[in-house]
Image (tube, rainbow, N blue to C red):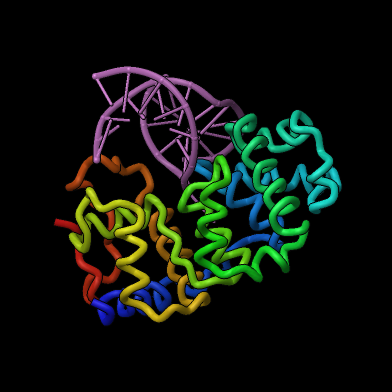
Length: 222
DNA sequence: TGCCAGGCCGGGT
DNA sequence: ACCCGGCATGGC
């Protein structure tokens, strides 16, 4: 199995090249992006982050003082802007109250305990927590998303009923705990999803998804 | 024009 | 333990 997943990675990397994730110029910007991108296209998130940057509030001090309605108005293009504004404030409050307003302190924590703390924040679920750990913190926490689930299930590598942590374990138990590997792997899976999953019905098990290099070990769905 | 996008939460059964 | 609706903008 470990040979299998590493082989898939090598094949994807050779075919698609490094993805240079996560897009963003600071750890704080990356964290903001992980919340804004929840069930939303990255294109829309870019506009929202652009608004924050142009307004000069893309820093912790400013964000901690920004009234929620002003925050919501700035992130409007990302959709769900009222709930996401609250979720962002919850995350900022965690950094303020439980990390001494310091990202150094935040990511100096033990990964497992920090993950549990992040999951305790209202609006931060497993994917967002893992994306923060991996892409903002450089910690080896594999990120699972809907593409990952669909790609693996349609190849028959996992069942459709597999839950988030089953899939996370599937990768983490088979691969070395290398942040750079986890970083690139998740990014490549999303890239595959974007390029090959467009306009497919995720509820249709026979819908063609992956046509990438079957001769290299990535098989066609049944 | 309807469906989808790098989720998550709360209420109902 | 599921299943479902709500949240919302922009692209194709």
